[in-house]
Length: 189
View 1 (cartoon, helix red, strand yellow):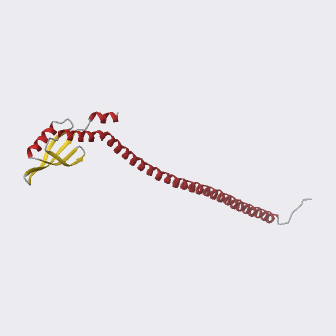
View 2: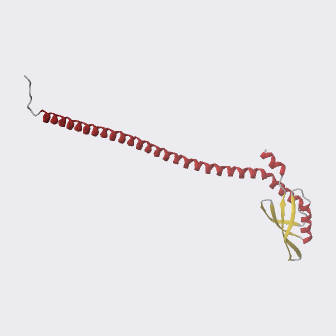
View 3: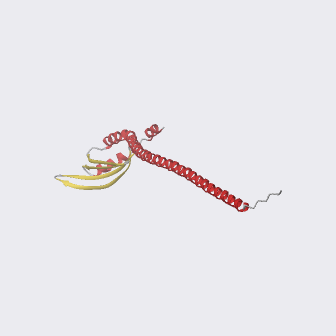
């Protein structure tokens, strides 16, 4: 005989499907929460790692800035030392020139002329003195003009004064000292 099922099987099947659907939704929700939490942990870890790298880079930058400051200080010190060395080299090379200047001045001063002061600025020398007469100053000018180490004599001033029974001529003469070209080139080469 045929069997007839009068139970509400469609409704029971619908409830089973609805229950399975809710379980699937809950499982998907739990899986989404787990995936979102894991992604959050991964991104937080990456951010922390990048922040640690940035902090290390900043610390290294600070160290490099200190090194740069120290190097700049050393560069300035080096420049000062090089400038001093250059000055010393120039003084060493001009050392014989002052000897030539005094030697030549002693040779070229005619009798009756007395020097009271000498001032040198570069190669220009200013000579101040007293002569028995203005002709003695002219003789000094001719002597300087014929010298190998002294050139371009120029009278700045000559004043004749009476002192007691004699007359004296106070004078100021500028002249140029010839630089020794052979000595400077030996040091450079």
